[in-house]
Length: 358
Image 1: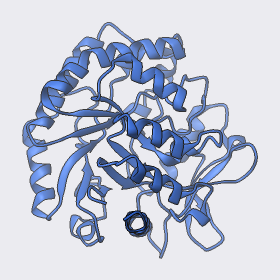
Image 2: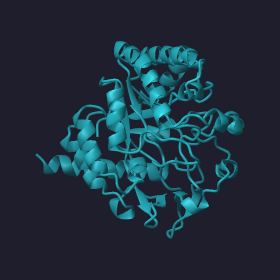
Image 3: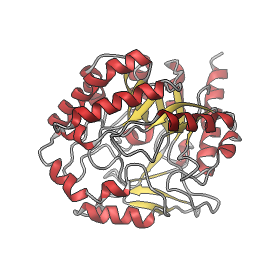
Image 4: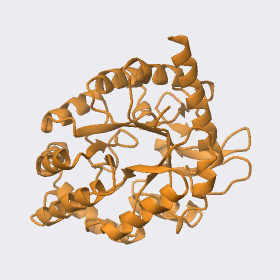
């Protein structure tokens, strides 16, 4: 695939090097970010330029950012949100100046994603992340402590220490925010930033809720195709788009992921794809991550890639959460080896589909 990428956490906080990424066949893009800028503050041009140079010096491209996180004041709808929205617009302009085409973001309250196990053991001796509802204790602090203890010393996206230290305050602040209010606050945000995106050629790509269900009483607004249609209507523009994460949407067995791809890629509303597989553990929807191969999980990756081919997808794609294999002990979900295998598999599917349709 033309725009295959690999998420990278930077030389300061990733044991994977750009040189290793460059050696994965068919990989042309790094999906990066600035992880040392506090949420809500403007991303400095100097740091963006340094990241871009680092990536390009390694023979790769930097055209997708994941993520420019949204300050909680915007999601809650506090009077201070306008300042953070203006900062966000300035960041969009700064990123556009260095060739960024897509910003992946989410609108999830408090938790960007949630798992009950970061090292779920698999029969082959590898391990991966899992979600089991019965292990989700009523007190969210228990989950926070578990993630901190099991993250191998890495800061995980959405679980930044300075933010989690204020978790009790955050739950109080979100107390009056239900699904309707969260959608209203999201529309306010989109109405403010999309004209800037249109002016500077940067597309927003919202990531689904992960998992796509209510947790700890917090609302969720991107769980399925119906939610996507509502979001699409909040501000009608090709710059108001989606990241279709096959794993996150696939975590609800009622979601037909290939059908979602066919609808929203065909409408040019999905500039970014996260391609990954998951394995359901029971009828209640508990799941663990799996290798990308269709037979290893519960999603048909062939049908997913065929849906992308049939709708003439020409955006950006990357493999997502992988297992820890071959003795690797890296950031949970973001090791080198299994994601590299995932890229090779996805590219193989694409080549077979492409040649089979000539």
